[in-house]
Length: 194
Length: 194
DNA sequence: TGCGACCGAATGAACGTTCAATTGGAAACT
DNA sequence: AGTTTCCAATTGAACGTTCATTCGGTCGCA
Image 1 (tube, chains in turn blue, brown, red, yellow):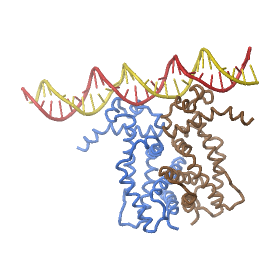
Image 2 (cartoon, each protein chain N blue to C red):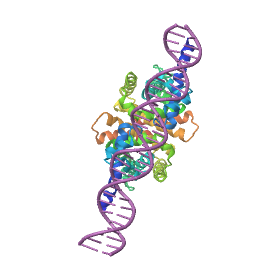
Image 3 (cartoon, rainbow over the protein chains, first blue to last red):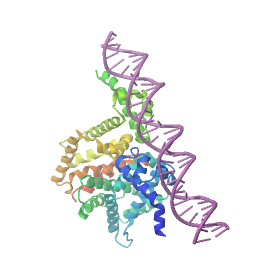
Image 4 (cartoon, rainbow over the protein chains, first blue to last red):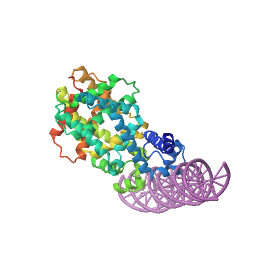
């Protein structure tokens, strides 16, 4: 049953995976549908069985990738642990996701800076954003953070983690838990109440 | 003489300016040469009098924009003032540049995440990067900063400032000097020796 | 008169998308 | 159980459009 479901989706997934890899390598405009088809080992027409157009293909790839990031973020989240531990856990998860999924990180960064992002309202992820924002708000209310607009915190943290992950990856460094902690410490020290 | 020089370059500049604005709006693949020509009020063929191809046009636009950022960064830099003041001055300048040149910021962000950046060696700007890195090194040696790999500091700071500038701009906020200082303070507190 | 700046229609390649045809496998029927 | 029916999945050649680039020609100035 599960196997059947996977079989059913296998081509769709292959198309999405190929799109992710090729876009990381050649960018949006540098990856024709024909190349995606070839890489995914399907015919060009097959892509249009699963996606209306190249644009919706990319938007659906964004949704899938963003959801993967969300899931990775939440892994091991434990409401009962101290706030600072939860914060560090979230940061570690995010940084690890970037390091372990370079194509996903590159794609997300390209996407958010592209016109696609403007033309596509985020819909359901708004709920997630509100969860994150309320998490920051409780950090401010609890006296852990400076009194910063909580909507500013998300992008700021993302900016730092992405920059650090990019650097680690481009330098081909073997990363360790110490590395990660060093970067997360920069974020924490930056926004914590002094 | 200067006037003649400006006249000589006016179409070239118009092409570069139009490219910047259109790419911010529609992205790389969304701005055809014909549209650039129309916006710059020149014929399509004229672009090829100044640039070999669309790719070199974009690369030269990157060089010009990056040099504008560099110049803005260095404005009012005074070697004789205290280190912390110089650091804050640099951060203010960078943040102000982003806020006041949104198309430039968006373009730079798109560019660094695009395949162009990989295929084009940076050449001369390496000198500038080394200046920045040695500035950070002296911050570490002087005991102001944590002992972080100085090559990590540049991108990390850029990530924070870009994220903050993006947020300010997207929220249509009137920004004030206090705003800027708040963001710079996050950067400073993050990397300073505790 | 010569030359660089400039024009814009023409060119041809590349691309996203379509579609008529084929396959395969599951239900419906005998 | 075998046969037919049916439709979703898949194919890849073909289509029409878009786009970067070219090129023959005009203009204006030295």
